[in-house]
Length: 464
Image 1 (cartoon, rainbow, N blue to C red):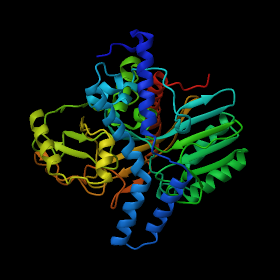
Image 2 (cartoon, rainbow, N blue to C red):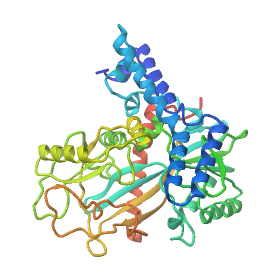
Image 3 (cartoon, rainbow, N blue to C red):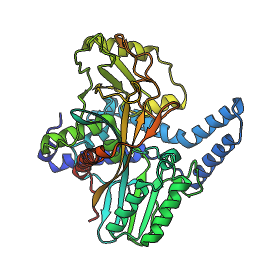
Image 4 (cartoon, rainbow, N blue to C red):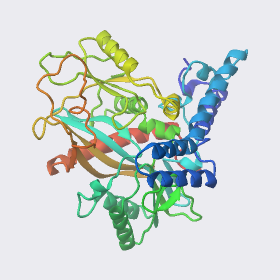
């Protein structure tokens, strides 16, 4: 519709960039309304945690959710409605108004299209200032399944869960060791870890601090100021330091265009597919992904689905349907029936869906081998990515709680537990076999090369 970005007039390119940047500022406008906002939300969460399960706890939980997330969710929705109204009233609507009226999001133009976008300083994710030797990078969790054809990337995740159970698998956590070795190798004297939904558990914190002291690195640990877990320094945005020599690693998801490219399932899939087409990188595989069903032939005796339907911004199994469909029309029919009968969200849950992308994607189901009595597994690889380099940190397998049944009928899969591989009651973590580590690391670093290329194409990632 717009034509190649590079061939547009300078004024048009500037208008597109400003539209994406302005949309990003509105998306984050209500995220943090000052210290009182963080204090009030934190106090309410702590009050909830002191209550036993029951109506009182549920009521305090609802109030805390409204205080913390209400402004963040309401402001962007209202802004888009105002833009859509302007489009209907204006003779010549602006680009942002036309996109809002059409139900399209400006941030989609940040995926291998627009260039020269500024990152909001408080929420940067991929940034380097050579003059001060200061860098901001991301910790990303990559989910793979493996078969004879290679490692298939299911999705890339931000705010990836670093639980104490993961740290406890190791005498020395390779994640912390590799972060510190990367920090030392690039000459930083300070390491700042910014956590989101999961913080740095006490054992991991000890390893960071002891390893940092041995290498002459000052370690600063920051956690969510709205709901702190372990007594680390509270923050909502990125910390700021008066001097340089600092590596800030963000394991926290903000609703910025940078995060969209990495975390959003449709955006990351498109960015990586373009990367592979242009470079020929074959270190990882990508399942077919499209807005319409991409059907492979389903054998009635096969116990596997042949298609997965996903809402692209929901995580931890939410918004996922496994399908065994005989045709594209059959897939559309059973998805429509399943979504129509699903419980409707109300209140903040409904607002979350308005802010998030509600257009589902269909993804090829990738068959993988069993372990432990017909149980499936996936491998989560953790990688840090920065403009000055990347490093593979650690990995673990998640083994499914339930075995795959002998027979799977056509239709939507009613019991998803054998196919939805995530860390939940009954599942377990184990370390990958040593003989797989080299190929897994190569696949993970290949994905990070592709994601880094997408960020470098769209954003200003180095200080002038």
